[in-house]
Amino acid sequence: MPTRKVPWYPGASCHMTARGNHKSNIFRDEEDFQHYLILMEEALYYFRYEQYEIICYCLMDNHVHILIKTKDNPPGKFIGRVNGIYAKYFNKKYDYIGHLFQGRYHKEFIKNDAQMLEVSRYIHLNPVRANMVKKPERYKWSSYNMYIGKKQEKIIVPDRIFYYFNELNKRKQYRTFVENAITAGTPGVQNFPAASSAYKSNRNAGFMF
Image (tube, rainbow, N blue to C red; front, side, top):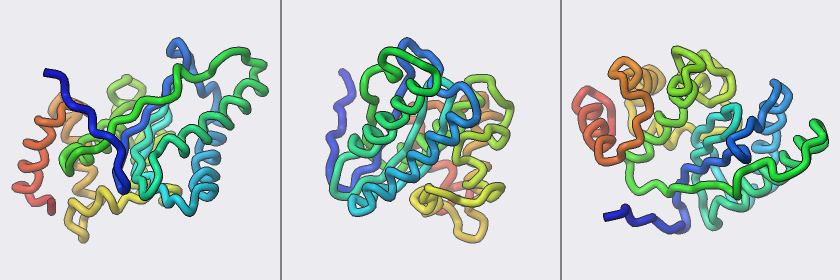
């Protein structure tokens, strides 16, 4: 039986992905990554009254992952603005003709706490799963280093994730939660029933869920 999709509702959190058309790269150099992040920051300000919150993100060569918290409006307005402006920038810079993104975007609304945690881990482990780096902290274009305290926080609201961990060593515990999946050989597995087991085991191991 197929899993029933969860519709948007006020206050929902959502895992959004947008992929390059025909899986083509949407970022070709560092300036492109930086420009997309600037557009994310600009969109947060533009929609400041909608009060979107970026929980975490990862920009890969040919796609993006954004975990976003909404308030009174669905998340499509946010990523639609970012991708629309970015596509114009990309097309002009590279004299590119055609659709940059494959369709609009994909969205998966978060159903429970375990899924929220697992999606954040999945997003931060994307570069590891793609064999681009051995450790997620070595990848420059995600929010992971902000989570573990190696980079100043910007545009993200990590407290939505840190809520589940002990306040005194939340960054260390989150790092353990993420990187244990690498050791276990299942980086970023997006199996939400299994995530419930991980949720319970981490709580029993001392994480504050």
